[in-house]
Each structure stands twice: as C-alpha cells, then as structure tokens.
Length: 76
Image (cartoon, rainbow, N blue to C red; front, side):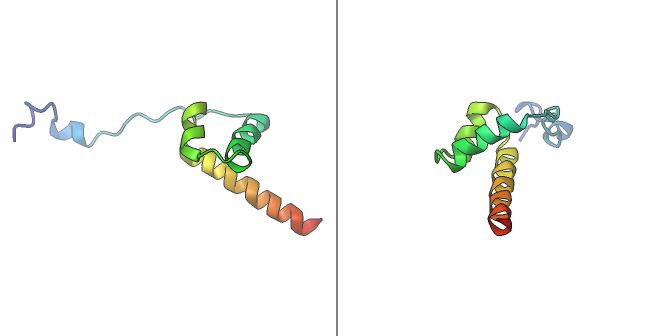
C-alpha cells in the first residue's frame, strides 16, 4: 500500500482532531438539557447533537442530577 497515494503519511495517522475549546453553560441551560433526557425521554446522543454538546458532558450532567435528587430525597 502506498501511503502517499491514499493521503495518509505516517505522522498524519497519529494526529488527533483538535480539541474544542472549553465552554461554560448556565445552570438553567444544563437543567433544560437534562430535562429533555430524564423527563421527556429523549436520547442523550440526540439531545447532545441538537444542542451541540458532547455526549459525555450531557451524561455527566444527567448523572449528577440523579445523584443530587437521590441525596435530596434522603435528607428530606
């Protein structure tokens, strides 16, 4: 296989995609995104695409919300 003919040089195949700059989201935005997943039953991948989020960030927010709710139910 000729690497040059396929547009892949040895150093190109090991390069990663540039990382997206870190963004900050308001508590209201996060709550709205989580509501779409936990209350309205939409899938994490779909909501992440619709809101231009990473799936991992949205999953983390949803898990944190579930943990917070569970903790709150124990305290009250």
